[in-house]
Image (cartoon, rainbow, N blue to C red):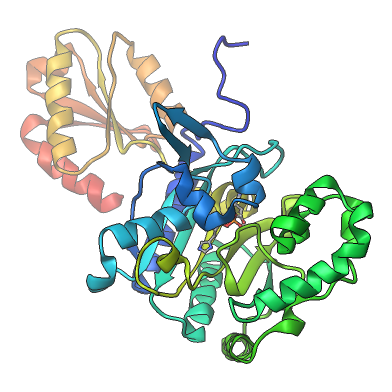
Length: 420
Ligand code: HAM
């Protein structure tokens, strides 16, 4: 076994696989652009306090899963999610005053110290979007529609959308009390974590994975039955837009999401093909978070898609298998190397993808390599070619060879690009 291994729950994305990631990112960027989203890149480390205030001190993410370092006096954490950093950046840069900066997206790694298993890592990646400044239910529906369109473009099917409303500052306190009243006589049957949740933030009991707790919660009151007039209207409106888009969903009154900042709309996209970690994407509305982070009282809405889980669902034929180069340049001896390097430079500057072979190799070994890599052309430069002031071009598919003078190199580049 090699002496050093990637840490448990982290992994390398190697050539061969990385092309699949690049393709997903390319398609996502192009699609998000069409919906008016602009990219934002925030640091991977943030003050720990940022996540305590936004995600919530009683959530599993903050209590158990953050990679936190204390450096001199400061506590900093690797970001476990992207919404809080984006909102922090939005407020810090005054993006509410910048035209077109209210629809943001990010692609990058997140960190949670969870027990690794299939589809669950300690370093994982998300594509996330945030829309800041509107509480219009159309934003919820449009952003969900965009998500499903993205999956369609990627060829991912058989997902199901779970939808709920988790109320707001008006109706949630009343619901919290109703839930507490339900839990109080059952505390002895609930786990220690749920007992703590009961005190701190009873809604979090729905995050519990313990079987007996789940059983006890089966008949618990649902937030949906306690929505205030405004939340009810908002939820109905989101639903009717989704209906008009022809988007199917199921209402899941138990869906509370593992983060505290949500109000009103909460949703997840599930896939049975993922196994135990069946959530492909999660999101919702977070009116109030911008203000909590020190900004204006602006509403927000967003979602984040887990890229490792998405990769598990991509159809195999969508993986791109392109050759790594258009042409391989094969110098046969030391004197030919300079001519080879100059030819490579000319071709690359003309836009051609060139593999320049270093070190001594025989012609047979060059050709074998081109064949293995699937490179369609080989430019051979040996003693004869140097003497004649040119090259020999071999077409790997037909095996045909023809001389190419140095002066014809640019034309060759044009030919290659046309074919590509
Ligand atoms: P989340 O539900 O915590 O939401 O994460 C979103 C997605 O990230 C999950 O559905 C899953 O695909 C992926 N994910 C989470 N943890 C792991 C893990 N340990 N390993 C692999 N994949 C994982 C959020 O993060 C919110 N910030 C989403 C959001 C954006 N809400 C509003 N805007």
